Length: 336
Image 1 (cartoon, rainbow, N blue to C red):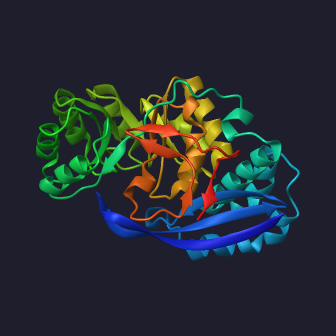
Image 2 (cartoon, rainbow, N blue to C red):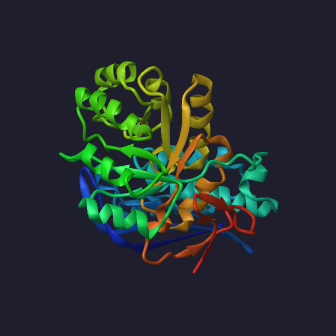
């Protein structure tokens, strides 16, 4: 099995702003695993919040090149367990590798990933489309540029309620709010009451990740469901979120790939938590992996390619929230 690593700079259509940063370009690494006529693909983006860079991911994967390239016959679960000790401090790199291995494994079996797992896709949730923080007129323009059934609105400003009121005047779509740790406890509870009146479905990660006492209070008093994101990174975090959140947003890059991500989904379901998967700013490579766990999810945020001015691959496609799978096996991804 051959390991191929390539860095890309994904250019965005618009400056993308959340409560703690703004970006115009998103660096990422694409992992390709080639075995004869078959190839599998995985992706991970750099992320300053988690201190992850593309050179760091490439360096950590290069250190274990011989171990990776001597593999190829194991199941994805066995492969992940073997590799985890070497990449336990860089789960983003592990994600790109794990997703590529899952893709390759399914292609060699002649199946799409969701078929390999025995999933059916009739009840797949629709993906939302994210509106980053900007002046209200620009946020409205972004909504009008791409009419969509569900919008995920980034907040964490001094005029959050005014923003949502203004956007509501231009759309009857479902709104979801992501404050990216930008609110306080009482602010969240107050905002939840007002936002419920404005047709908001849920709030994502309003408080700082480690404010567990605050999460508990918000969980008890919020008028809207609260979904964990920055508070739910690895597998052991799912149980911690029980009775602190109503659901968890599982991001494959943060947890180490689709293999542990599927385990996290099952743990969340066991605890009665709502299940969501989210994306970083990613190309169709990373998004196509997320698409195959859709049958297990209540909500999904996989709009990464829609934010790009130019994609680097083909795979799943999205139209008015609905995801259509590529024809090929595995994730169906092909690099341009």
